Length: 399
Image (cartoon, rainbow, N blue to C red; front, side, top):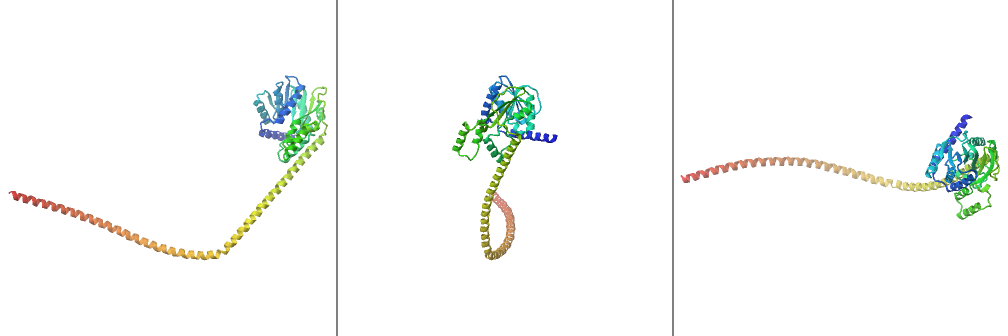
């Protein structure tokens, strides 16, 4: 049993590590509006200079809203290092001071804070773990403990959740919205000071993000949502519970309707089952559409095959003609080969004759050269003899 709980805790931690690794860093507008609403409620409870701890801080948006007031010393605690890093970057971007602590809020701590709160945490745990979490939070508080969780009566929350889960866009796993938390607060030894609804404006984001709604009708829904025709218990996305570590009079008069834990679990399980059904039906529709596309493609391919078969048959009918042409071509090829062979022989003969002619020309050139040398020698000799005779004749003439 202990190993199962450790494995479950490890899986829960890894889920949030993955979530905050990929979460966009921009603050959603509905979160900003909630932060203003939340900080106003805290200002009614605490004097300036109070110390506040957010357990399971996640992105830390609500703590950032309190830090913007400049009234409090802000501390944030989470068991996910990625969540703490995300929150640290959020505060650094606005240059807001805060202290960040890596740890498990279920474990007891020291009473160092005037308010210990969390938002969007308890709904991910069973009742026994919620009580343990509240006790861990109470051990760190000198006075107030507050939790905010999704409101089980908020109609648009359920519609948005079903749509996102059915489309595969639900990264939070187990999530059981709640009503009054009187029972869990008392079981944790806290004095229950009442409940309050938050996030009417946040719910508008659920309405705005639903696809397939005509814009004029969407605007009608928003106007109806903003009116007082829709009571807070149906219009507000979040329900908050306030307690204290010592007995105090109630601070919040309006309380949520109590929902037995078993009924809340069944409602969340039904939502998950319905989301699976919607997802399955959508997948079936997608598969049917793909089947129709495949059938259309198959019909096209079959038509192409029939056309190719007709072309093949036409070619088959031309095979005898092509055979005759091939035989004629083979005969022509044989004749050409024979002619080429004859030409080759003639070229070889001409090559031999050319070589013989070249040899003869070389011999003639050699003979001409020799003849030219002999002629030159005789001419030189002749000239020498003639010159001598001329000289003798001159001598005789003068003697």
